[in-house]
Each structure stands twice: as C-alpha cells, then as structure tokens.
Image (cartoon, rainbow, N blue to C red; front, side, top):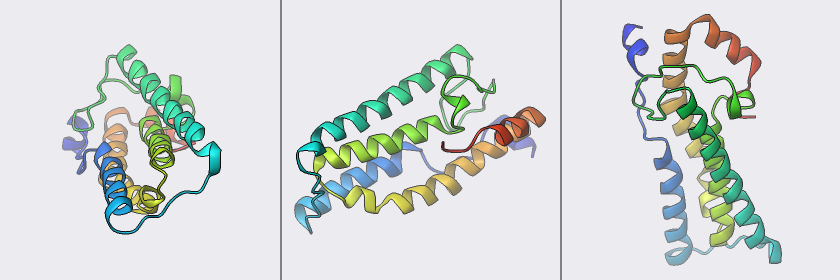
Length: 156
C-alpha cells in the first residue's frame, strides 16, 4: 500500500492503445480489408465534431490539473485531488476525451477498424491504467476519494 501512496503502478501509457487502434485500423483498412463507415455526407462533419469535443475535453482537463498544481503524468503521483471542472462529470475525462477522438478520427478515415478495437482498448485501460490510478488516489486521499467515487461516475 505504501508504494501506491507515492505513485500509481500504471502498466500502459494511456494514449498508446488509442494510437495503436487508429494506426492499426488505418493500415488494415488500406492494406488488408477495407471496412468503410458509410455515414454519408455527415461523416466528415461529425468526425470533426467528435474530434473537437475530444480535444476540448482533453484541454479542459489539462487546465484543471494545472490549476490544482498536480500532474497529468500517469506514472507520477498526484499532489491534489481534482473534483471540479470536467471531474464533476467523469473521473476519467482525459480517457473519455480520447474515446471522442478515436471515434472522430475513425469517421474522418472512413473506417470501422479502430472501433472494432474498442473492447480491447477498454480492457487495457481498465486493468492496465485506471485500476492502478484509482488505487493510488484512494491510498493518497482516502475517504475524500471514496466520497468522490460515490458521487461521480467513472466515464459519464
């Protein structure tokens, strides 16, 4: 438990599964088996919208971390418990923003491949990252974090 106080034992760099799904999905779509997303004329505008929402959520979360003088680094220990800003709605707003970005880029690339990797991404994040971050936050902030968990959902 003492090591959890210092930093989370994160196993995976959180953006890596998303990036791998996008790059791998793009490659599979172009070189192995095209799986086009047929969203018609709305695909590109919706892709840009999802991408913009994801980037705004990501930026808002970074700003919240900055205001609280804590780190976004998943391998470093938190110095403050953020419960305002996007953390009022989600305990994992950066990862939620990453999902928006994944969907947006998949729409822009016009391929379903990245979305087919979504269950694997979820498992990798849940057990390789989030589990360790939550253990760290609970060890460091105790009852304040447990109350926050009861109040705010993990995703939305």
